[in-house]
View 1 (cartoon, rainbow, N blue to C red):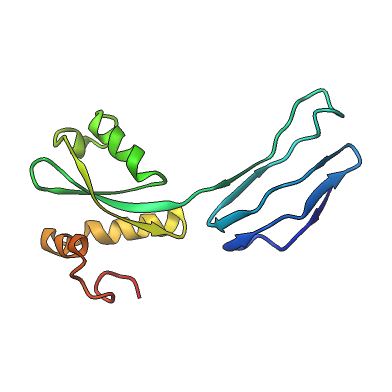
View 2 (view 1 turned 90 degrees about the vertical axis):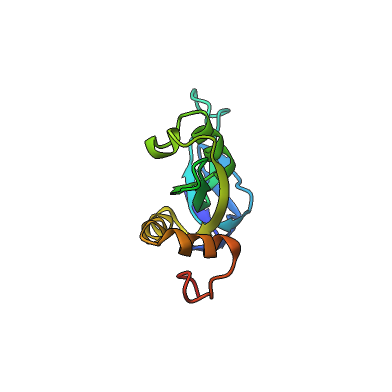
Length: 147
């Protein structure tokens, strides 16, 4: 199998073509690229197994929920809106389960799941007041952990 295109890096990604004597395949552009997952299988016309290619752009977020008792819950997800729905249906954390309904108070994009987890740990160490300042946009850039 031959691959033409730039190496996979964070930023932009584009493959011109992907071909093999037993099948051919082309892949579309994905922008922006935070994580790319490629699954390649043979062309269904030349193989008994039908195949597909999927390139998935996964963006990770750190989020803060405002709970019904006024407390905050901090977590990570790749879909903040769906995650809030799950929390409100009782499928989220134990902490948020007993404090429903919850609402999304804040979210920020992180470069990877690992970066989102690190930011989550940082935010969980903050006081309630400092989280309020972050949510309101009153924190200086240096204080909120991002330059």
